[in-house]
Length: 456
Image 1 (tube, rainbow, N blue to C red):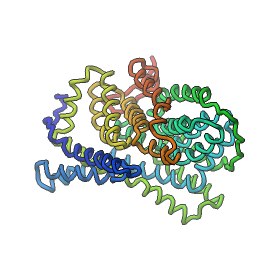
Image 2 (image 1 turned 90 degrees about the vertical axis):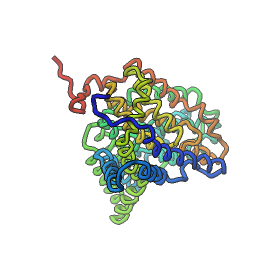
Image 3 (image 1 turned 180 degrees about the vertical axis):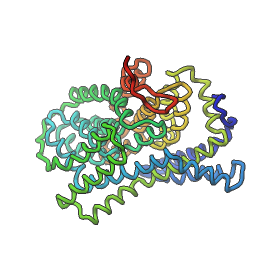
Image 4 (image 1 turned 135 degrees about the vertical axis):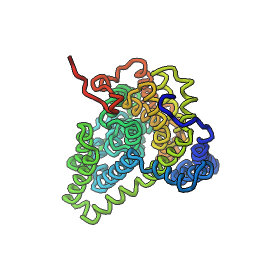
């Protein structure tokens, strides 16, 4: 990387980032020891990042104006602004769709048609679709988990296994969703299209999902078949999710897709009386504000990352990592390990991707790891770690919905999907079974985009 005329490596420049992680992680540990619920999510992440920014202003050389301009330049980076705008639109779409009854209809549609003897597998599928549609694993858990607990009790199912099915399905969808904040962060930091990352991810994630469903059918068979209710649903209210999913994968501009999705949901809500023009506007705005945390984290972290990079912090980290990387495969393992370890430390998969995105991009350029693949690895390993750590939001929600009857430690060994996903992702590094999309449209490193392969 010497030929790129990088700034001189400086390990001390990483201190502001370490301050951010220590404050975020330390507050979680302290609050956890005091028995505070959702301890790792009490201290606002934007404030933790801002503390790192203050340290950077104190440490780094130059005038206040110079440092401020560097910070603003990072905050206003094109990819950061695009990422933040997509966050706002995704939040608005999710908020309006939920307000008009889309989530309830989708859950009830699935519950109505699940054969009673396949409850556990069915809950996995429903959770997967809800999280793909809404872009949030926690949202899917909130919608499905309370129903899952009741069904498990009626059917004599192991509640731990049932909750593991819901968590697994939720993480499957979150990892694939084109409106998930993890997908947005991974693709924008790596500079690739969402639809390409979706296709690559699908090849890696689908086999573990299918095996998990088979295992749930075999081992999740109820001791007594409960009477399944005919739940109230409206197929029209499911259409906005399909609209966004299909058009995103088809390659239509994400801003147009999400804006269209907001209006489709709004029109349906108006037609059925779930929304008025005023409440439609309010729900759209509420959707914007629901993304405030991740919006601010992304923007402030972008500014901090630019300051740290200019001071040589990123170069220092890359120099250390390169000593352990011998080629393309070890580069992929390095990217996966970095984001997984970061998520284990801060229990936030999106922030983990934002922190490691610039590092992964540099590594991918140096060792010619396709950006679609580096984006996929960032998302997969951040989501796997997030879904397994006992202090993550997903596992904490399990304890909340079961009123403490089920410990996250009982659920973690039964998270078959996450375990199989790790195996599939690692295998894909050595056996390129998922690289069809990459081979079909190879990456042009000079143009910085995928190109159509011309057949002779």
